[in-house]
Length: 169
Picture 1 (tube, one colour):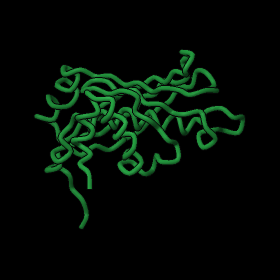
Picture 2: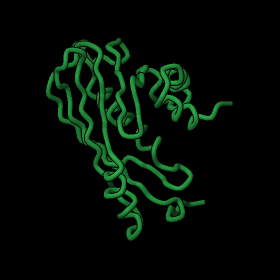
Picture 3: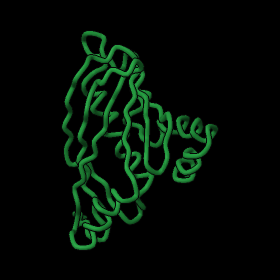
């Protein structure tokens, strides 16, 4: 078995480990397997992911499907957040997603999401000191290989300390 957390950390600094990450990614996020998303680059504050222009991502007019574009928006934001947050301490659930579609995707496209340390302090860690949970909007933009702005997504993630999570047995 592999330690996905260690692979993710190494992938932030090494082309080889980024390749390994993309190799194991379908096992980490099996729902996205048919899309063949690929992490192009990542750091503690930035993630760029590719949605390939391929049949499994097409709509009825051979453009990138709206749902595939929404899915990579969820993936890019969620994957970066999970790579930074201690998943043994915090639970992350998508609350909702809003998408604005600007241009039809007819080639490979790239979703990008960025944060910084202050953002985590202001949006997550600070508010969780006095609140049971927080909902944070994450803005992600998708551009095609020629630079055309395809979409702007706003993915709302609910973050909660696991000690505050109530589940039925």
